[in-house]
Length: 285
Ligand SMILES: [Zn+2]
Figure 1 (cartoon, rainbow, N blue to C red):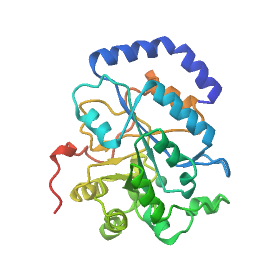
Figure 2 (cartoon, rainbow, N blue to C red; figure 1 turned 135 degrees about the horizontal axis):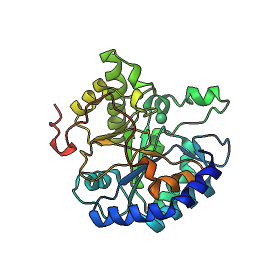
Figure 3 (tube, rainbow, N blue to C red; figure 1 turned 45 degrees about the vertical axis):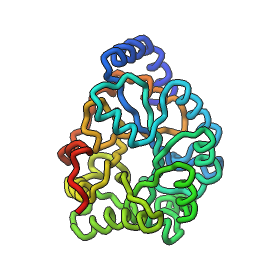
Figure 4 (cartoon, protein in one colour; figure 1 turned 90 degrees about the horizontal axis):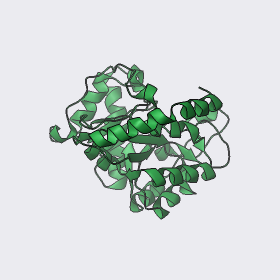
């Protein structure tokens, strides 16, 4: 839907949204929304970049209406039986160096938690993503020192594979292991901590697979993120974390977070069985 049509739709459904919100709150069934961004910068705009001003505006809007919590606290609230506090968690994907200029310092200044997923080949080699090169914007990836700095500022680093492939297409076990386990090992050795979270590149259902999910579980991580646009609900297992793309503009985000009646039911079927609760994971072997 175009922004203008979306704005009209929000106005038309405003009463329905208010009613849903108060009913869900009273019943302890408010969704837990997890957002993902990529890059905050004023130059080289694209679909995965948001300007500094707009990012600050998002944070203002969110802080007025939601508790902004870490991914692990979001998980706690998903696993719990009741959710009556409007909750949002913030994540970033890929690992762009530009985020050092504004996004991370701004989150830190506001004392907001976030989880930051990086594809480790680009960090290690200091090379831009092929999709940015193809688009004529060879943007710099984060350095290991920057990731350490983010960590010291309260940002949790998560794994996003090594080379950012479509994991849904990888059937060879060794290749899958190299991308998933390899990226977790890279981060563990650079940052001296246990990686708890993983995000699937592209993150649509067909970019995931049962093999990849099984492998993630065998590594003893706490949860993984997809990105196809869905709410998380209380009493879900909390291992699979559904995320919503925080678009450069504010209107789509507002549409999601004020509860779009059309989006309450998940419209995708998943190519994997939902894993058990993250609290029932087998220990790392
Ligand atoms: Zn990505």
